[in-house]
Image (cartoon, rainbow, N blue to C red; front, side, top):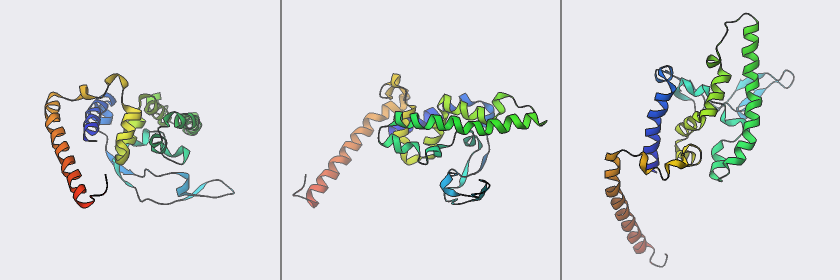
Length: 205
């Protein structure tokens, strides 16, 4: 786990550099990452949202996270499919819904311009930023950053480049030098654990 998280931190620096100065200076905002239909009340006559519920996971996050397509379009997070090693199944179901969802902000952006609002360049449009997030893989990168318990699986299934092999080549020289001693320490700890379990549970293997 620590090995993968080190690689993820290396990727963080690369990702921030690639996103440019505007993202690097991004401020933190109050952010609710659970704005899914299950947490909304709808007027059945007008189909308008009347209430938003459950702010349990609301916290301060980088403002650019709002530029990712919603993870909840399938009512369950992509980590559910990744846990089952079914990323392709997730993509087959998610992508059409994402395209349908993005039509809504695109209509608002076009209407705003038609009504005399300021003409937005493509890079300034929320819909365009969401599409770029999906195209570049930033969706997965940001999702992994928010879902720390699933970071390992998300990295290996959605972010890792097979051309990098086991990822060892991504480590800097200092980290590589420390890796062998770390492995020895972990092996010793495992042996101590197994010896202790043998004492406590002598009839089990």
